[in-house]
Image 1 (cartoon, rainbow, N blue to C red):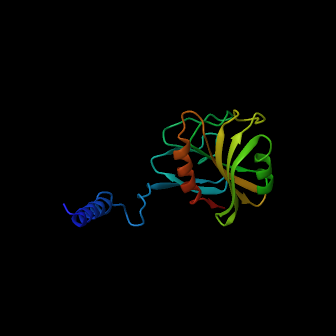
Image 2 (cartoon, one colour):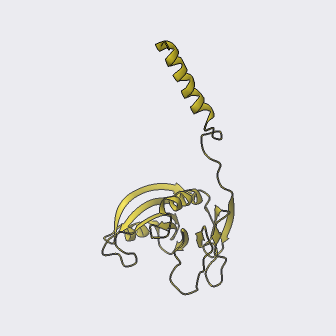
Image 3 (cartoon, rainbow, N blue to C red):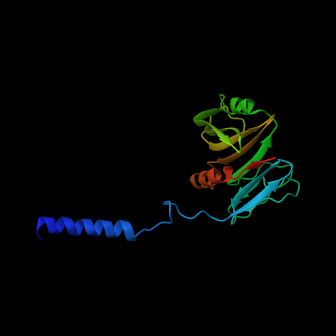
Length: 182
């Protein structure tokens, strides 16, 4: 085979493989999973989550607070269950929340100011230190905190054995885009 013919054949093979073998929907992204909307009247928010996921419906705990790909139980007046994503309104201004979570009990791996649901927000990735009162040292947490007057809506996931931290982060990133505050 002459060099020119060889190059032409190679180019055709590359074009065929890249153009036909792995076609994706327009925009180059896989289709988004179907979503279901869930409302928490007490927390004054609604949020969409993957339709295949489970969420709590109440029973002593405000609804739409916990989200997980498989069924789980929430016991009233007990510790939070280990779930993929949790959402909670906390009674403090955004600045106070950030200061409390970026002190000596956590190493800040990422901190980014954002605007979400039309309000000031921050995205944090933290690693618990020896001084953490709640999490074992070294535990990573990925969270969003959205300021809403004198309170914060916190959405988070943890890197704990049995949870898909990377996958749950991606779902959390999508969920936060659907958050509506009241």
